[in-house]
Length: 319
Image 1: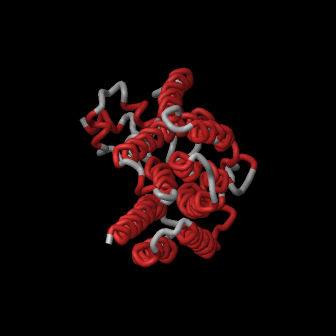
Image 2: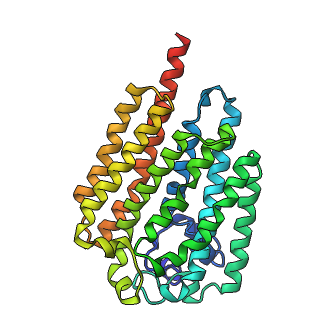
């Protein structure tokens, strides 16, 4: 029943989540811990992986079964690693979560899941992630392992710098490098530019996200770009999103993605980012959350731009 479900759902989660209603009651706190009810984080982690795959040279020459298998592996990896990262973050931030208005109902902060149980749950998710990672070539495997240092340090950055969103950008977009490496066994300029694009994109969307908690964060002594920028947030977002868009376009150009079809959809990407900046209300938490969640559309539009351009280029070679 809805009343029973609301007893274990934190304030920043929807109580009508279908996945929570389908799961046994005892599993629900772990689903909340891994944010299974909020897939936006998985999408934001996954899209850079797929961008990197698609921008690799001669990607259309791969066997379709091989390509789709690797795309699926990245999807599974993004799902479990996002869950493991959220679990780790909640373990580290359990005392902070108890003091922020949006998060005291999170499973560890509320006592629904013990720290010991959360550690075991995190280890299980990491194990699945390592199994997925081992399915790729050796270079991609070690590239993925190297990202764990970024993951481990991230929860502490909000305590020591006004730029924790920058560290999240470094962490969350590692998949752009991995996707490219999975197809080529190496890294080249287009992959680095996609990584840079993801970095600035994350700086933007996570600054928007941080505006939800800025008052509580200020009281708790937590730092963020939302607090640093304050009323200057919109101009800073315009800079971050502008650089992200330019990096995506330059990566596509260097990768010799056919320009005309890519440019048509890239325009839609630019419009989506511009809408976020112009329409954002930084003092309205609900609007900040809505704008943050809309970033799956930008990720999807970049993905479709590269797909359509590659298909168009492949069609021309057949004529």
